[in-house]
Length: 258
Image (cartoon, rainbow, N blue to C red):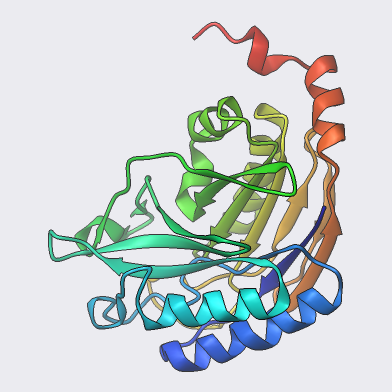
């Protein structure tokens, strides 16, 4: 299974960001990718009002992404914002293409490091998986990566590869934490972790606008691919058979008691 991580830098114009999705999906598909992953907040970056850009997954922005995915015969995963009845929005990972079209709503909201995502974003509640060519993928968004129980729940639902869309906040020690968490979640769920972050935008302020360093880690926690800070396309081949063999050797999911 070939997967592409599109480490872009989103702006505050959804139409311009859609153009990025078109361009980078074409590049990823030309490289043979079946699944094309974009970061959290692909539709619109953090640090601006999100209510005006929020649309349902059957709205024009997500429908246009589906058309891009269908044109290239791939599944696209991309971060967007959807309306919530509370008046807030949902931080949603759109999954679209090859007959699939739905969203995962971020469960763990980033109320940390001086930022309060829950002021404007309502949490999701349901771990979500999807299947492409017999590979089961789990979905997580940014701050979710600090919660190993979510990744173990996704593994229990059959996932062997975890997609993480992120717009990681900059700050002292944050890159080291990101690197460690990507590897730790791979190891403690004995799964592939495919973590695609926003490229470093150089924007000052408390909003998490990205640091780059998208990472692919295998089920033993070994890093297979790692991007720099700038926009970058990372294309990798993942083997679900490796997960099966590692889970036989390191059966932490089968052996857990809590």
